[in-house]
Length: 101
Image 1 (spheres, rainbow, N blue to C red):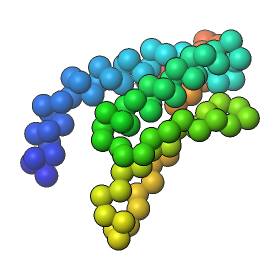
Image 2: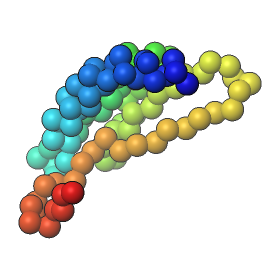
Image 3: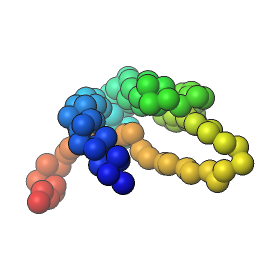
Image 4: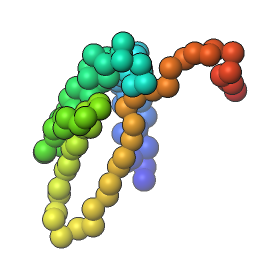
């Protein structure tokens, strides 16, 4: 566990920089004006998976926005871990309905 904590502490700034770079892309999937940004976000996620060492990474077209698929199989006899997440965001408006803590 100490090795993990040391690794996280050592790379914390890089992790935050990468996250902030991703969050700066306005990937509002509910507004077609942002379609190019949603596609750019999918490319960012794909590139991040490749950089992280995933062996099979692809952007899969859909009737809507693309999905990003990546896998890293270390041992096919070990259990599979699935990570699922959205790379699109909600539109900011109406701003007065947002709550911050």
